Amino acid sequence: MAASKSFMKLSSAKTAFLQLCQHRTAQTAAAAAPNVQPRLKKFQIYRWDPETKGAKPTMETYEIDLNHCGPMVLDALIKIKTDLDPSLTFRRSCREGICGSCSMNINGTNTLACINKIDTNLNKGTKVYPLPHMYVVKDLVPDMSNFYAQYRSIEPFLKKKNTTEADVGQTQYLQSTEDRAKLDGLYECILCACCSTACPSYWWNSDKYLGPAVLMQAYRWMIDSRDDFTDERLATMEDKFSVYRCHTIMNCTKTCPKGLNPGQAIGEIKKMLLSYNKNVAAKQAQA
Amino acid sequence: MATTVQILRCSTRGSRILFQSALLRNTSVGTKTTFGTSSALTNVFEARRGPFSPEEKRGKGHLMSASTHWKVERVLMISMIPLMPAALFYQSPFIDHAICTAVFLHGYWGMDGVLTDYLEKFVPWVKPLWTVLSIIAFAGLVNFNYNDVGLCKAVQMLWAL
Image (cartoon, rainbow over all chains, first blue to last red; front, side):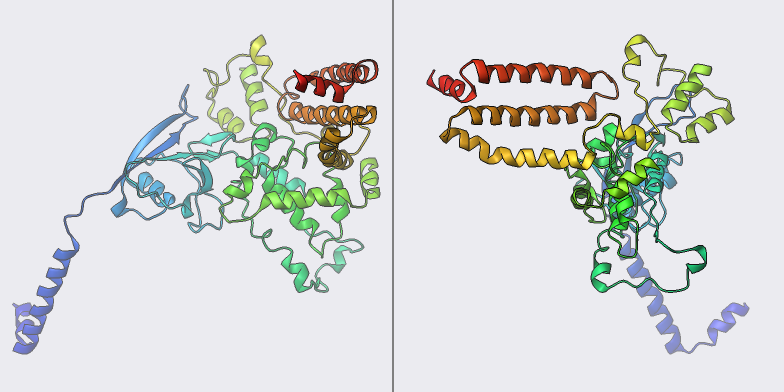
């Protein structure tokens, strides 16, 4: 009764206006829920559970209505995980193509799931596999330890000669604009491993060949004008396997989801290896 | 159980994830059919999977450093570009020996790379075998050039057929 009394306080004009608003919102609500056909897309996803005894890898098919899903493959994977199958396991973090967590093989190409648009052709399914020739921890999660160990082995940090711990942080290490421009196209690597796992040489020799991702980062430190250990860095590549298993197949550049060019970086390393100071290499071999 | 653990240790390549989780849960991952037991046949396909020290990667007994070897390979490749058409115009024992040496070295180093990529880790004796075969083949080529008609004449004879 008290509520209806407060309503009675409105003037007739305001009441009419209120009723009009309610009527119009009801109309638009009805219009927003149309009879749209669900656009069902099939996703065939590689599944393997190591904790089930004797389990073999399988392909499972999920159907997703693209009208209620974001545009990227990662959106579909998350939707499958929340709605259809919570056991689906995959790495993801930033959902914007900068962290490198969600790298996987989608329709035969290594990319990041978060920036790979779902192909809206409903007649074809989308095939999702983990990165090729990597040990699989579970479902779409590969074992990246070898990759990270190789990255660690090239010493991806600034090394200066004739400095001590006390000198660190005292002055800026200045760099000209031209020298800084040399790092463009190299520093943007997010270490997603798409390129290395696309390289056939890395498939067959991942234990000894460093792979395009790591080699591009090695090059990034070699040509950094602030780094003093270029010759030593090149000397560590003086064996049959670390660099020279690259046969310019160029799968790496083709597949890089960030548009970088590891193949060219490796070519530059090979060029640098022709004409660097080899006395350094001899000293390193003795050490 | 010991062999399973050994196989797991070999196959995780230094990563402790699978190995530790299997141990903690006390399940036997991989006892069924994933890796199986090592028969004489499957032994052939189990190459050592690292980690490899820089000395192991360098290998032993090399005449040249890796970068010099690479440079020599490319120089040889480029030298073959004028050499082949030259043989069309000038036939001489010098061209015979030059082409034979160039093609032989190119093929020897090329095949060496192929074997290193695919076969060496499974069959370590394939490299010395290839070297021995190549030496015999080169001896045959030199003999052909010296005691027989020679390469350029042989090609001419083939075309005349």
